[in-house]
Length: 394
Image (cartoon, rainbow, N blue to C red; front, side):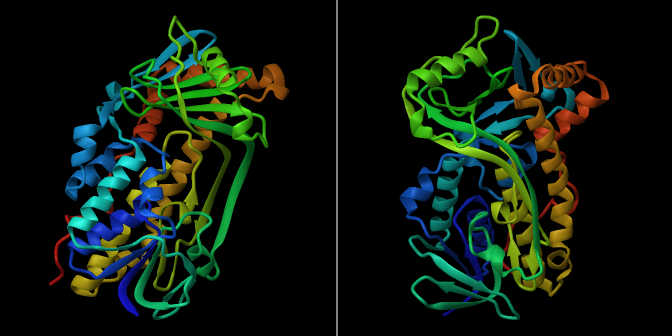
C-alpha cells in the first residue's frame, strides 16, 4: 500500500495538515487509533491565539470559530479576595478566540470529509520506519509506504521513536491539577486565575453554560476520590473575590493532569516529521499547546507544498530549526506563568512573597506588562509563518 503523505493521529495538527494537503491535491491519509466518536469528544484546550485564528481564517476553516466562539481580550487574577483584571487587548490591540478543541476538531473532520479526504478511524499504528521511503506499519500488519510521514500522534505515540538521534528534554513540576468540565456559566468575562495560598484554581471560558475548571491537588491524587461537594467548596474558596464566585453545577468530566513540559530536538529525521504534542508538551498555563500544534502543521504543509510545486526543499530542511525558535519562547512563557500560578504550601512565606511580587510587577504596567501581553495572546506571525492558501500543485 502506498500513499504520498501519511499522517499518524487525528488531533488538531494532523487534521489541519490533512485538510490543507487534500485541498492542494496532494494525496494523504490519516491513521487514528480511536473511534471518530472518541476523537470528537476529547475536551482539552479552548484558547486560540490571534495568529492561530488568522491561520484558520486564511485557510477557510474559521467559520465555526467565528460563529460559535467568543472573543476575549483580558484575563483576571484573583488574590486575597481581590480581582486584578489584566487587559492585554488594550496593550497590544489583539484578542483571543475562545473555541473548545473538540468543536474545532469536529469542524476539521467535517471539512476533510467534504474535501473527500482519507480519514481512517480505529486504525492504530504499530510502528513508523524512517528512511528514504518511510513506512507506517499498521497494527494489523500492513505496511504503508510514503514519501513523507507526519507524526501527529501525541507524546505517547509511536512516531517520535522513529526519529533516530533525537533527544527529548523536559521538566516535571511535581504538581497536579484536577481538570473539570462542568455545567457552570462563566463568573466573569475573562479567564480567571486564582492565586490562593493553598493551591491554584482556574476558571476557563468554554460557552455560556459550560466551563473548564482547574484545581491544584496533591500529587498522585485520583480524580474519582474528589467528591462534587469538596470540589465546589475548594473552587469557591480559591476563586471568590469582590463578591464573585463560580456557580456550582453538574460535573461532566474529571481527570488529573500531571504538570510537565518536554521538547524533542530535532523535530524531523529524513522524511519523518513531528508536529504538536508528538514533538512538545507544554503546561496548560497560557493555553499554548493546541496553538503550537496548529502552527506546526501550517509550517510543515508550507514546506510540503514547496516540495511538490517547485522541488524547493528549503522550508522542509529548516522546519525543525524554524519551529523550535518559536516553541522554546512559548515553553518559557508557560513556565513563568505556571510559577506564578502554583502554590507551594511547604515553602511558606518565601514562595508567597515571590507570587505577590510577580503579580504586582505584572499589574504595574510598563514594558514587562506589554511583553507578557504579547506572549499571552501570541506573538505576531513572522514571514515564515504566513503561508498562502493551499492550492493545487502545478
